[in-house]
Image (tube, rainbow, N blue to C red; front, top):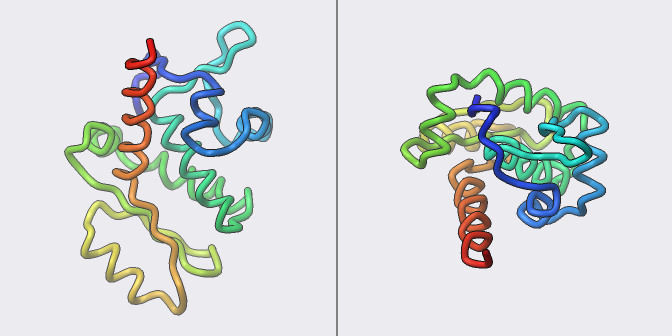
Length: 148
């Protein structure tokens, strides 16, 4: 989705962004949830990896099983490369809407459609707005560059 040579974050930075432990990130790698580049013994994450890890952390916080998270990640990988580039650059939105049973999910780039999906759901729904994840990632990059 994003150029795999775009190396951006180490495990500790990703863990801080996602508000999980570095060990949790390592475990997700071992379980093939999010697969970073390996350079020697270091895990190196692209911007897209960072977004995926933050999404996984939010879903786990809401009690979504790893099996269902894998399905959501597979769905995310089916979003076109052009759309992902637009989302990562801030020129487009992406919303993930999951029903309260975590059985059905949909991605949409339309805020009104995301709201319709929430209204149409039989019960509560979880919505993840990817622009918020991109903002968190960019804030972390800014903090890193200021600290350097």
